[in-house]
Amino acid sequence: MTETPRTRVGATPAGRRQLRRALATAAVDLFAANGYEATTIDDIAAAAGVGRRTFFRYFDSKDDVLFANHDEIVAEMEQVFETADPARDPIEVATAAVSLVLESYAAELDVSLKRFTLTRTVPSLRDKEVATVDRYQRVLARYLQDRFAAAGDEAATLRAAVAAAAIAAANNHVLRRWLRSGGREDIEAAATEAFTLVADAFRTTGGKPSAEAEPGTVVAVLSTATPLHEVVTRIGAALREAESR
Amino acid sequence: MTETPRTRVGATPAGRRQLRRALATAAVDLFAANGYEATTIDDIAAAAGVGRRTFFRYFDSKDDVLFANHDEIVAEMEQVFETADPARDPIEVATAAVSLVLESYAAELDVSLKRFTLTRTVPSLRDKEVATVDRYQRVLARYLQDRFAAAGDEAATLRAAVAAAAIAAANNHVLRRWLRSGGREDIEAAATEAFTLVADAFRTTGGKPSAEAEPGTVVAVLSTATPLHEVVTRIGAALREAESR
Image 1 (cartoon, rainbow over the protein chains, first blue to last red):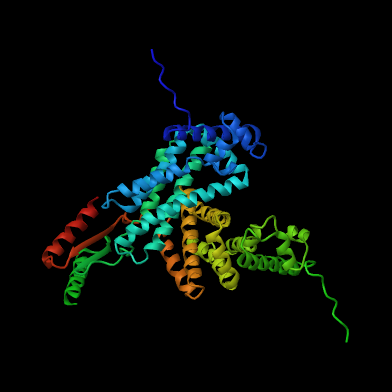
Image 2: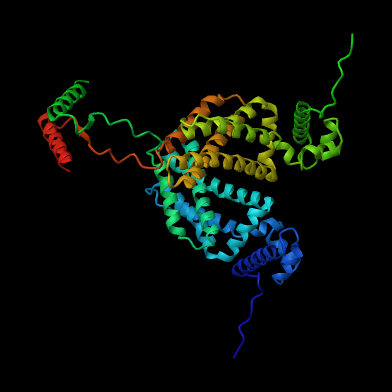
């Protein structure tokens, strides 16, 4: 039996992803066990079975390693936008893209919980996380801006920035609640509730308020306590007035 | 003529605010002139006429000095919330509070423009700015959560987080556009447009969609092309049906 030649870890794209993940897991475990400040880059590299120089081939700093998969998520989001059906509601596409963040957290519960504790206790990591969210929020905003502008919305940039922030906030809310439950809560149900709230808030047709009626339409709101003959008289008068305009 | 005894700068609250501001202005000027990296804390302290130790009595780091008035703004916001009329729309109160940020930027145009250039060119400062926004966004969210919860909104935390993010995003949009115009654009008009968009999106009554009509009400939408007798017949039928329920 011939032995399959073993590729050195890090020599192929899959190997690089694997090593990147190994470094990230080692870092989170060490931070959780020994504290963030006390953990050195040498410790992390050693735990993943590589040298310090290899660490720096993958990450710029100790902070970076904690948000290792962020670049991947942003790239996946961009792919969702590129391949999205242009007829689909833009807010719906954006919430689908942001769900990738939830999925990636759910796929690595242990790492996610440890990171959650770290971001709540180390201010610099909290800031790093906020900057991370800001980055994908800008990706969302760019997509929404293109879609809103294409629909003729004059306030496309503003509406896109506001909607993207709302979507990111809804996503963070779901994520934090789920992490606080130790990953036991139904993350999908919570996400549906949160994204529905955002979709309801920003359900627009190019930014025009829907209060104005189409010409040639009569809207009548009357209490049923109004006598029937009175209703008929009023509707008739409204219709004649509308037609004479 | 007796000489008025001069108080040492930094000995009174007003003097401390003045020195704090002098350090901030000196820092921004030096960053703009010589670059952020090249400027040392000693340079900043010297430019403000104090020593390095005095600098550290006011700021923790070189980054902090760039967002010197942030604490003041957050304190002012909290005061707006404490003294706000409980009958006033919560979104309106929140946008009024966040306007304090716009006002503080507008009051120091030169510093604001230099800082804007720095945050666009130095990634660590950009991250710091994002963290700053996140901080006041959380203050907004806390206020909105209390108000929404008091109004019986079951999704108060979620809605508050989303609305606060939307308000902060609208505010940033206005601020950036205004800074990009070199401070020439009408910041108040832009703020009104942006906050109206947010208010429209989140105008709710405890989170219930307004699509459901009150019981005992008939809403009729009919084209005026419908013959009058047909309109009357349909309205009559709808009313009788509603009454018989």
